[in-house]
Length: 110
Image (cartoon, rainbow, N blue to C red; front, side, top):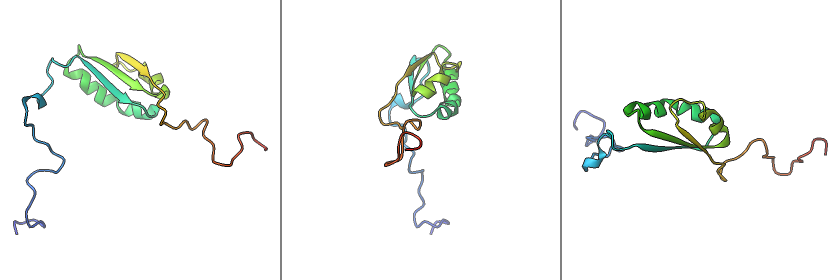
């Protein structure tokens, strides 16, 4: 044994992919336009703001576009790190306001 509970200790984390090409390095100034996709709820868009800020801090001239759900787009227009918002109502998202339980009536009292 090598001092661990494993017969052979892993050298690197399994999710780590070493950079084999030169294109894996920092973006520097070559990336000018970024599309961030967040098609879920308003709170999830707010939780993305630190990542958007980090993208902006890398190069202030980058144009950051956010593709968001209608709820997310409502708040995204007020985020200083987002230059453009594209609103998209994805067909696979569930709208809680119009979803009913199977067999339940849409009208109260029936």
